[in-house]
Length: 390
Ligand code: GDP
Image (cartoon, rainbow, N blue to C red; front, side, top):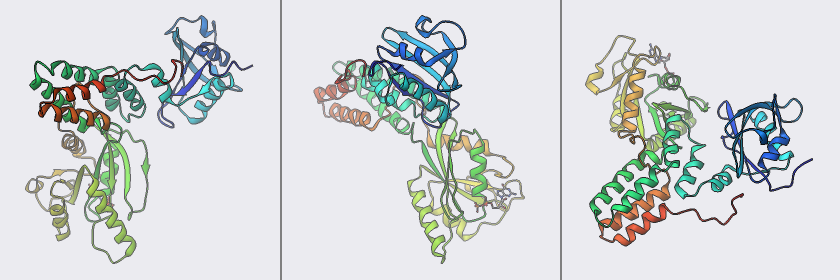
């Protein structure tokens, strides 16, 4: 028999289709009763009789169900977390079992609101579940635990007596926004170069290294092929573009147009050249077109036809893997020259950056009242149009 509705709420905290483990959170006055109705412990007492923090092994779901670990996070107000296998079917089995016992399905944001008192912490938790790498998750976790709020409060505290210090603090935060705003979306790196220099090979070599592939979108050689990966823990989308050469074939020409558009959006272009062949006019054209690009001298396993030092290039062999590690760290340094120090505030939402910018402008204009208002809004408690159990 199912328990009264609205007495318990359930949400899946982990993103769909990612990771080996899914985290399901249950809260509300009847959370423990609903969890117990659905949970079949391997042995021992019910969850209601288990002390908070103790992991319990059991099963959940219709039929044989799925093996899960359940833990009572708190008993007053009641909160339970269930760890299930990460696949969609296993998560559905657990969620359906809990809904079948009367829990209402909610989105993670509902749990975040229910739990967080401050806006920054709530936003950080929402973003945390979408963090693509451990490194980005760590930074967001620090913001959820108050790093950004502490820095904003420090600036607010310094405003009246030490406005120069307040300005320094706000400027430091704004500098870190470059990284903060990319924690979820990552950076875009495009591979450019004429056909046959080894771009596809290089894309494979780069995604095979420090591997953290989430998905890969295959296309034809005339399309843009992208792959998500991570360089030193920073999420990067690599795009291998169509070979750059003028073409009469309309489909190939469209591919080249797309490639050029991608390069325009890129954070960094890797200009790939074949070191085993003399440079061609087309190679030189790509080098001069991509003045800010990083030059990669590929096929360094073969005898050199020109010197990589001449072009300040990083030598690699996409085929054998030589130099790939150095290329990865060079790219990471180019993309993120100043990684945020541990435990410091990092603005990670555009709205936070706008507030900080407004506070900075006001500070520079000597309007301390307006600066204080903008900073104070960032530290405000969340409005609560919903009750605690929402
Ligand atoms: P793309 O057209 O620029 O994408 O080039 P591909 O990745 O398709 O490579 C073109 C050819 O060069 C293929 O035959 C590869 O096997 C070869 N190739 C790519 N990288 C290397 C390398 O580092 N060393 C050697 N010896 N051959 C390579």
